[in-house]
Image 1 (cartoon, rainbow, N blue to C red):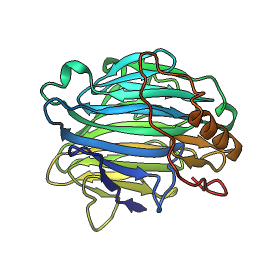
Image 2 (cartoon, rainbow, N blue to C red):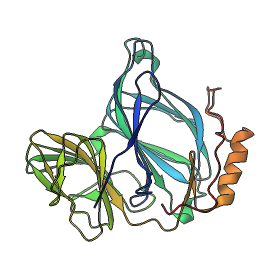
Image 3 (tube, rainbow, N blue to C red):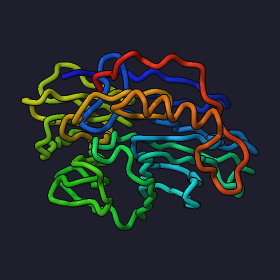
Image 4 (cartoon, one colour):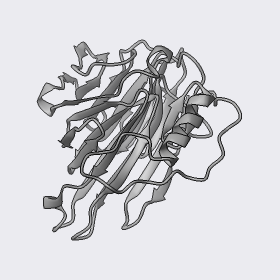
Length: 298
């Protein structure tokens, strides 16, 4: 079992991001190659989240909020607000551009934001598929109860329930809230499993020390995935799936098994040949960052 401490970054105005994947200790859990926690934060009056248009290839993004609202716009013409408990699944495939912003009507008082974003590496046969976008309301996400725990099956199958989100490969994502002292064991049998602690603290299996919030617990393939909450309520997210089907390059917002596709995407973005987000003129420039000589073992 590994316990990974994300590195926090302040993006300005007190907007903190905690990145648990990828890390030096662990590059992926199942198909999940990226895990960011943003917030919780109360932005100043008149401020808001403004992630300008930027590109993706070879992955699917999953946005999941606990507080606040983010307005998603993409080059397919999608304009969809995401709110707590809802799921945005965006398949980049061969290329998509999107922005993420606070709605104008929430900026006057300063919006509050808290959530997670995941990147899922697409399987090899879908890396160059057409881009797509799907939104699922909170009411469509199955809710499950266990002694001392309430669960939302956000993606895949777990705890006897199946999410309605159409997936590109087998995986699971479960939002779990535990009462003080409650124990919950993950029933999913996938080889790669992890739990991200959002609130409270939990003891994993028979560990001597509890794991505090904003840490990622990665379970070994042969061990149970059992958590026990401490003296306060705990909020965790379980995730995982089968191992990746091949190593991946992960460079900026691009994920691919092929170096040439990353290079093509770099050139396309720098020359502004990616599809545009309707109604948006801003964009995030291509960073000056070297590409690894070989795919990282994600």
